[in-house]
Structures are given as C-alpha cells and as structure tokens.
Image 1 (tube, rainbow, N blue to C red):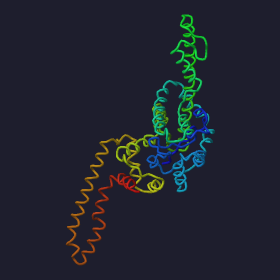
Image 2: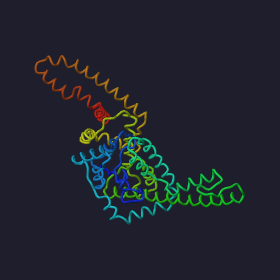
Image 3: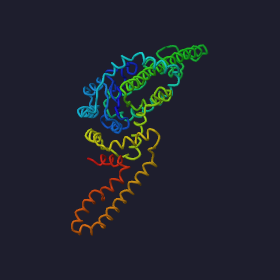
Image 4: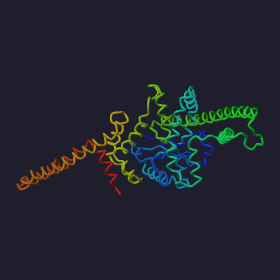
Length: 388
C-alpha cells in the first residue's frame, strides 16, 4: 500500500498569515503525542505502508529547515528514500490540473457551513494539547509560530474585545476625557457597546468562515491527490475530525471511507494498549521492520481492526498476553517431552541419525513455530522493542 504524507497548508494561503516563515508550512505530519527537543515521525503509522509519497517541496523544506526541529524527520525520510521507500511528487501541479473538481468539492461543503463549526472546535482542541506539550521546549520565535498552525482571532477583533471589556468595567471610554455617570452618558455608552459588539461578532464570524474555507480546501486537496495517486493518506492528527466528517457525508458511490484513516488510528491504539512502553523506533529499526516479512501479519491485524473485526482495548491486550504465556508454557513442556522420548532412539544404530533429522524438521522448533503463527505480529513488535 502507498501512503501519501500530506503537506500542511498545501496550495492554500488562507491558513497561515506568514506561511513561508511558519515552522509547519508544507511540512509532513509528525507525532503530536510526544516531543522532547525535536519533532519525530509517527513511526507506528509508517509501518503500514510499502511506500510513502511526499510532496517534492515538502521534502526540500525538510532538508533546508535550519531550526533542527525536523532533523529526525528529514533523516528518516532521506534514508527511506535511499532505500526505495519514498517517492516525491509535485502536489501543486496535480491540484492545478484538477482545480475545477477541487472548487466543486468546496462548493458542496459550503452548502451548510454551520455543520463545520463543531468540527473546527474539535480540531482546535486537539492542536491545543500539542501546543501545550511543546511550549517552553523551543525558542520564543518558533514558539510564537506554533500557535498559527490553527485559527487565531485577528488582531483587530482582539483589540475590539479588549475595548469592550474596558468600557463595560468602567464608566469612561479608554483614551478619552469623556466620562461620567449620567443617564445621557450611559445611553451613549450602551449604543457604542452595541455597535462594537455587533461589529466584533461580524469580524469574528468572517474570520472563522475564512479559516474554515482554508481548512476545507486543504482537506479536500489531500483527499483529491490521494484518489488520483490511488493511495491512502496520513495527515496531522488534529485535522482528523474534518476527515471523519467528510467521509460520513459521502455517499456509497463516493468512496464511503478511506480505510487507511481507520488503520492509522488502529495501529496507534494497538501500541497504546499492548505496548505502552515501546520506545525503540528509529530510522534503522524502521527500515529493518519494513523489510521483515512478518510485518504482513501486523498489517493484516490492523486492517481487521479498521474493518471493525477486532477492537484494540485492554481486554484484547490482556487476552493476548495470557495466550502468549500459555504458548510459552506449552512449548517448554513439549520440548521436554520430545527430548525425553527421543533419547532411546538416538542410541539405536542408523536410527539415531534419522531421529535427529526428524527432530530437526518436526521437533520442538517446528512445534514452536506452529504455535506462534497466530501471534507473529506480537513477536515481531516485541523483538524490535527489545533492541537497543
């Protein structure tokens, strides 16, 4: 499966006021659940694909980023590219060639713009958690830029809001000699407050709608590119509410849901409940894992979960660990039994050599492999988790 990694604010200047200076502009998604002194790839999600598709400009920006925040992300994709796991594509040219279709998608979304307001709130809430996580861990200039990844109230409306609070709390207008407690003053004050409240609400709503249009264009761009390239896609996690809503609104004839979106979340759930202390992913282990044949078993399990056939919860984790314990006990018991039963055979001339061959081909190792077959995905992950 090919997995398209999105390029934030692609082909759209409505999301960021200073796009070229913003640390997220055109960058592929990173993990928003962990941060130390730099961004890291979502390694678990990267296990799901045979190949990754990156925007050419995004790849170049990763390499040219001077902050060091994307050093691990760039190193990862640079090595993956050298190993043949990354393909770079010009996303903007694809969108330019399909502008009419993109405009039609947006027009459909805006038939009922109010339905997107709670979606926007959910998305902002997700980002706020990540923004809190990275506060104080990067320099002041970068810190200011993190906030512009999501919607900001424009400066003008913020000034109006402060003005209203000042007037409401006092009996005078800021920066003015006009003040008093007369009925005439209160009447003027109320009239002015009403005017500015309405004006502020208009500014706030207009700003919110402009930003919503920006995010919808961006989300539609990723859906369209992935469809044209016949791939799944992975975006910044805070935008997941937009995609969930989009897919819920689609008809059966319009690709009801992109299964990769469910798989992306499912693999995260699997690691969260079954391997909460897993810390050992890096580019070397990722490349090794992508070449490991057992990864097919992991992808099959995750796909089953995405289809609703398996649920990665605490009960699943406990059941898995219980089964693994039983398998270990059973294999040890079988090894001892086979060892004891084959000792006499080895003492018989000519038969001993044949017995050794049979033990090698159908003995403890064969039995152990057969017993562990169902949980190859577990042993696969555990093996990489135990590597230094």
